[in-house]
Length: 450
Picture 1 (cartoon, rainbow, N blue to C red):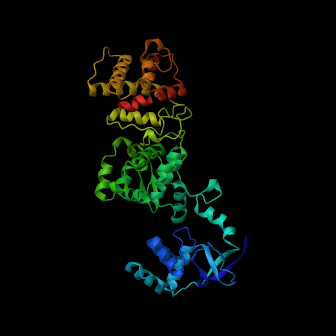
Picture 2 (picture 1 turned 120 degrees about the horizontal axis):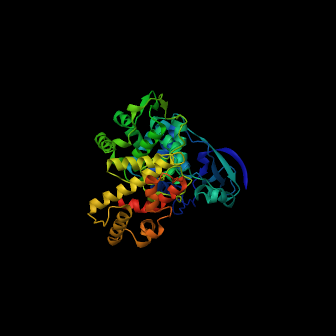
Picture 3 (picture 1 turned 45 degrees about the vertical axis):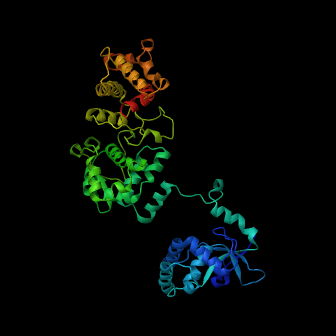
């Protein structure tokens, strides 16, 4: 059990012979040598931090040294104690210590002597067994919540904002996390983008201009719609969230300019038609539109949740196609941003157009012969080509084959129904049915454009 908490002169505290960081050793010099060898640069960094910032509020865990009343063995805090002893007396470094280590410790010791630390706050346990539980919780992970729960990427980003203030690069990340309609897995991917990478890009006037942003003091502002900015930022930074791009790809200015050149014009906000008052990225306006999912270009393979008709757009926000055809890419982006509950007819017609035009591109590219220039024949021809070339299996193609089968031409996902969205004045598209139709054809569409 804990007996008391009190300050103790650190020169009266000894390193632990049973420190799990290294093999058991007998003497204090041997323990010092083992710690220097195992921790090396980390120990230097700790010593430097102690000199610059002090020791910090975390107490040492100690127990009495034999029956002595004024001497103790450290159970938790061996690294800190080693750093203090070296700063207090650099000559105690073992002979085997590397020259750079000795030199640095001597430099730090001189600074330490100007504001020395003599006492450290300690919690005194009666014996090793009494402290074991608390040491275990500290060093062995979360322990189902009983131990220290590490911050995830999102928590680190929030703390960074609290510490530094909302710098422009943090404003970009925070906006994506709050406004991107992301699930938790996707949030973690975007939150894990190195802040330095975002800073390198967003600090460039050319990048800000392309993304519809400008700086006023330390704030990022825009006059584009929230949906446009959301889509542009998510599309621009998504490759860094998925790992497709690394910091090394945009380390130099020329690399960043090249990356910007490859960012499609149609994904950039259209500021020419912007009429609204400028607004801060930190305080986005409430949309007159309902929150529409933006087209974040991260791979469908990172989805952590099943598709759901509860989404607001026809194409899920966590689905990505790389479409080089300018008009079809524009239709694709519109289907990812269109509020389907309000614009069901527009969504139905665009879906029908997008499907057939995608088939036409694939047919032309692969020189597939089609018996008849009608939608169901195009689906059959493309499905056969995909199966024959091992790109999709029979089971994977079943949904689209059903759509092209005349036996099922009155089904929700059938070419007859898709055609009726355009030609039949009496049919009423249903948002949930349209989403289900997309879910059935999603893998097919992904394969067409891969």
